[in-house]
Length: 452
Image 1 (cartoon, helix red, strand yellow):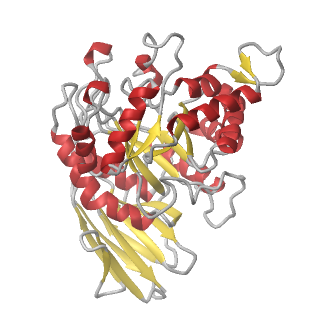
Image 2 (cartoon, one colour):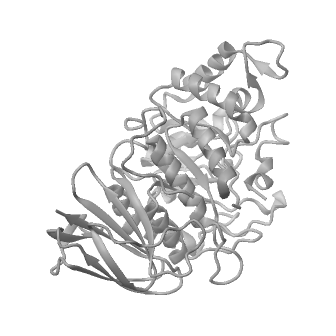
Image 3 (cartoon, rainbow, N blue to C red):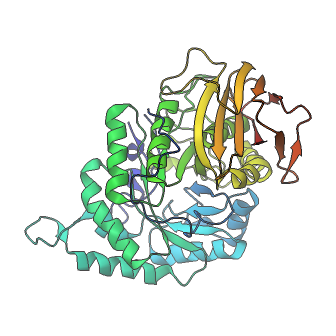
């Protein structure tokens, strides 16, 4: 079961023959690429693109307020919770309401990624792009270029507009024509973010599919969704780390950033998360090299859809839930600050320390020239680098329901160890540079810088 089984009808029934709109997020379902190897895919340059460039860490949401609640007050509420961008959805289906939503985003300093535009659905999702007129249900390259240009002209006058989704969870059979759609869109809108999000999965077949996606589409980022919090208290879905390991390795191979959707809504088979579980998903993702966090969902999908969604950050009636306040704390006091630190860095390795048995896809700790030994509670160590001998270690609590107390032994070649303070945005020297002792609340993490 994947996300297409839910939120499928956002456009269907409202727009004749409408394509499945962006972001129907659902579930399911290793290889650690050598981070020192050069990228082998000629991916689109991403450093100067909206959300990917700059110092601000992207924190996005899907399923924003519906058209009747697309107001300045609602978008100020989104900004207050620490989000930086919105992905269209929840019946924002035509240019008029999409532009209105963008202007609401504009007013509070949010960015907006278009999802569900019908012209995009036509050239990227509904038809095959082919100059062979004998191909059924096809449009020519020039037709696709005309549609992409129409989309760009429709929205580009609004500052919040950063780009558009070319489709959510595309099947592998669509990759060839979607690759052509991406190429044409890049030609038309080279300064905008062009985006498509992948299904979750595990195993060699999934890795092959992800690699084909990257090589064929040459996207500026690799985004996927996986929702690990099952209904049983304290449980998590198997395959979460294997999925992340595959995404990480393919993003490193391509030299592009990875993004993820985290679970922020209750639905069949998945529980309503709490603040620690939001933090846990975010920190483990950053340990695996993630450069952007997206919430699924912000607004509760309407129960009239028949999909049995529970509350999200907001109820269907527009009331804040405790998760709104939890997300606000996570986003504004930690994720924004630590995300800005890790965004420009490259994931060098990620290991699970003090954990046996290892979950599928995880790599156990081994000594290197920065950390030589570990002890105590299970933690995930995300090691990141810049272009120097300096390293950063994100120490993430492996558990969302227990405190972690762990120690890391530091290699003798390290001359200084500093702890990042999100309140000040600076680093404080650790008195004993030979040892890192850390105590982490459930789901929490700490970021250390190691100098040589």
